[in-house]
Image (cartoon, one colour):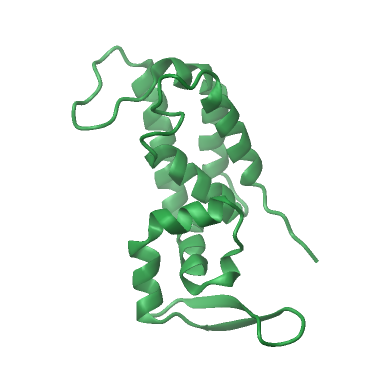
Length: 163
């Protein structure tokens, strides 16, 4: 069954939201261009401006995906607290940075598992934080940047409703 997308119609005066079934091309774009779409969502681009963005935002908000993100955050914490050598198949995390931001990361995992809506901007930011090999989670010379990034991510998770 095709998902519905909510889009902002630009050709009419004022802002009008319309709902329609997602096209196969849009569903494939949302899957194949996930990183690019996450980058746009994290920068604050409204999901309703593009069907692929709307689909990606919807996917990120699904309970199953939120749980996957929470487990990934917890896995990062477990790896930082572990005395085992990091896996050779993954980019090693910066343990000192993770341990320095442990409280914020635990709060992030709790928030991802909690009830209620989370903003797509924040969810996309979480995904990018976990997957960007050049980001503060992995970059050794990023003193204090991970704690700041996680704090900003927690703030970005809060939905903002404009009337």
